[in-house]
Length: 255
Image 1: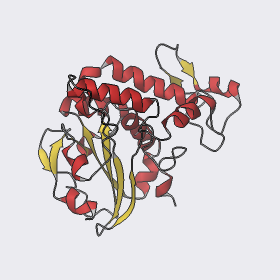
Image 2: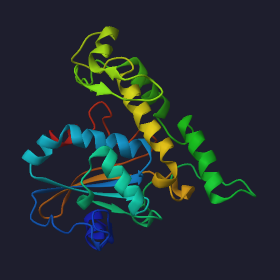
Image 3: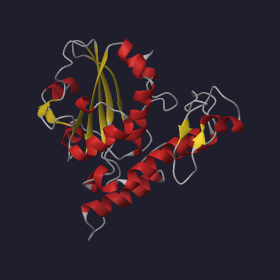
């Protein structure tokens, strides 16, 4: 079944006003619809994906792309997520139990169940194993890429931009040029952005993750044309695997 059929029949709570409405409402006339099934809103992938959307917002607007996101959490999770990332709350919906993710047969992540432990504790153990690359192909390589840099990826932090990533002191973007220049992803540049995201989530853990049972659930990206035909999809199989091309996650929109 085309995922558009499922999505067009789905209602969820909208973060901006708390109303339960169809998630595709308001984008019927858009030439392209980009629908993101985000994992837990406090997940590294959710925050990093939203950062790329903000970075390329002008390109998305120029192409007339309507964006809708559905993340795992509650409305408070969504409000915090939007406040931190700049994702428009009127386009974000929440699914507290990942029901839509499961209906679309998205990867649930590693699902080992140790006897005597609660679903939340089991999810924590599975998450730690996935962070180590178990049941999460490519995660470690992507972590290391964030530290070593990547000359095939774009520069991420402007030279005059100030990055707050506790426990590090404030860093100016030009600092990363000391490690190799400019015009590409410098060593430690992506790792610093990820550290900033981690500090944000850990400081507000209960808000971002009201129910830890879904910590390992992965997401997906779907792009539809005006007729609802699926023209691109990516189904996540790993932590830090929310895109086919992690060097430039939105490159599929410019092909």
